[in-house]
Amino acid sequence: MDLKLDDDMLNQCVQCGLCLPHCPTFRVTGDEAMSPRGRIKLMREVQLFDAPVTDEVLDSFTSCVQCRGCEPACPSGVQYGHLMERTRETLADEGTMTPAWQRLAFKPLSNPTMLQAGSKALAVAQRLKLLPGRLGITQELPLTQEKLTSSGDDVYFFTGCVMDAWQRDVHAAGKRVLEAAGFGVTPTNELAPCCGALQAHAGLAGDTRSLAETMMANLDAGTGTQPRPIIVDSAGCGAAMKDYGHLLGTPEAETFSRRVFDIQEFLALHMDRLPEGTPVDVRVAIQDPCHLRHVQRVHEATRTVLRPYVREIVELDDEGLCCGAGGAYSVLEPELAGQIRDRKMGAIDRAAPDLVASANPGCSMHLGAAGASTVHPMQLVDQAINE
Image (cartoon, rainbow, N blue to C red; front, side, top):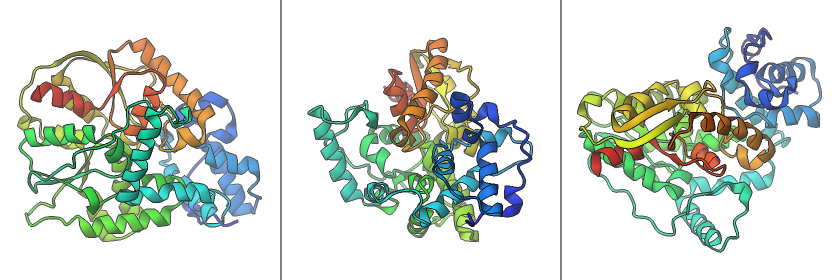
């Protein structure tokens, strides 16, 4: 089968194995087929030597969390994430993976009306104790929420899909912090209902391209000399939007991606505009979401922004190893996701924090389901300067 991979990119991997300690699925299984090196070898066998896509090969590809922790560790600069996304796209197009029920489950993400209705139904089911535990929804889902309104046009604030439906309070905190720094904020709301990150992970990159084109058409660059920045408070969404240039392969997409900033990244550039506050009296462990640390590589900004506003920051001793959330991974691969999370919970227990700060909703919910007290960094900054 032609996986439609670039042969030069595929052959960049020299099978050195330096990625192995940074791969969460290899760490918990010890199985070479569950490592980046092993998966790339299987890609080569399928594409170059027409090896069959057996159940074992498919399991190797679908069990990848797509944390991309292997990429910073790779001396050859292998773009493993792009290889895996392209492999999954080809297999999904061939009907080998991502069955119809999964495709159907993604449909509400790009339809705000459908998503809000579905979220309200989940909220009711949660209150009736009818939600299955494997969904990992530990917070109380809202039945009603106030829509975020514009306070100016200095920056766009990407609200997205699931996070806006389930954690709009986090968006509200981030918006207040941006406003405290003097920025007028335009929430994207229906202008950009979904970034397509979950779809891309599932091999539905065509859907992601469509969503990217809609977003690019709707979020104008503004009239000033500097293009209007697009601020994102979800690490996975920000990583996806910064990758639109690669995904679409156009100069316009490259330009758009350069306008995207993680909210901590953006505020770290403007610390002089943030007001002083009363530091929150907590010991905080920072959990770096993989797509902030390994993909965007701006995780240090979280520390820069958070440090003045909490009593103490403590680092985890696992060198940023994945928590196992992986978008929908914790639902689709609950056993592996749980084993990976156990390692992260061990690091959290050793750090003994009062709270765990995570800048990604999937991570915070996944860790919360295991008993961690999680919070978004912006909620702590908001508390310090606005209460």
